[in-house]
Length: 327
Ligand code: CUA
Image 1: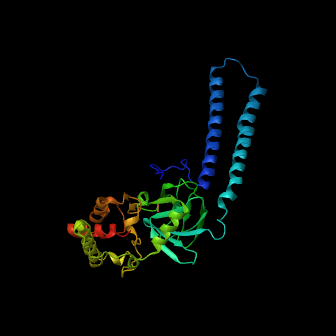
Image 2 (image 1 turned 90 degrees about the vertical axis):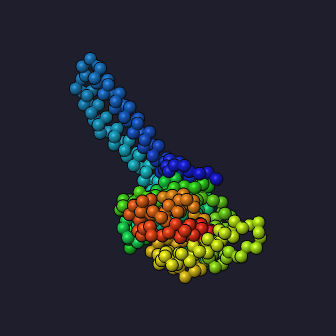
Image 3 (image 1 turned 135 degrees about the vertical axis):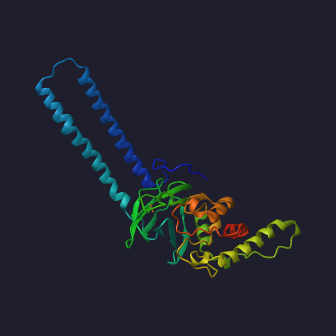
């Protein structure tokens, strides 16, 4: 799978972004051409010893100062305006619909399946390749802006309003999404990952995301003596689950299929399958999760999650096992 190592609107992977990049190249090309001609004339004016007639200079001022800019700018503007309706057209009826809400400083994501049921997740968006997708964007607090540079343009997320955006990924890969509107302390750390896959992988992923914890195979007593390591991890995870409730994590986070039903923070039902921690801030590894749980505010200053520096080392370890196993 193609891994995007950097985030660029010119590294296109969606129809919207392709058109926007095309517009950028024409604009940049036009601007460069005009710059070269202007500089050429300036150099000529400095070096030329010849006296110019008033008639010629007048035409140069009218032509170069008014006529040429009007024609060039009108051309580029018409080209951009022709593109607008195409970029704004909604996805066809029946297309995949995803609701995303900006929250300080993460992303609440709800997939709407074909029965109208909402499937919640956070900070990560899977999309099937070569399919139009309709996003419904809103905010739960301040103004944010939803932007996946490789896939398309950005759209503001406003409290009390739903804005829409159509995206159409054209190749598979992992892409970066960001908040593109200054929204407070952790604005620059309000990110997410976008995973574009083939249709089958996407369908399987969505079925998995819809499952609650109870529907999955609960860790069973492992009797195979060769697999002592595995059962130690499972014991740790079971302790972590108890810690999750006793330390109050469930007041803010939901794990569907358990009594944890908090809605203040991200839904963690499938946390272990996500690529990042803290809304795109760290890669999802056990070491990083340990860091996040023990020193949250150093990793992401301003984050709404309280600092749990009172957690003992063994409690953090058990939480890392429990959360990491939530695939
Ligand atoms: Cu949210 Cu910037």
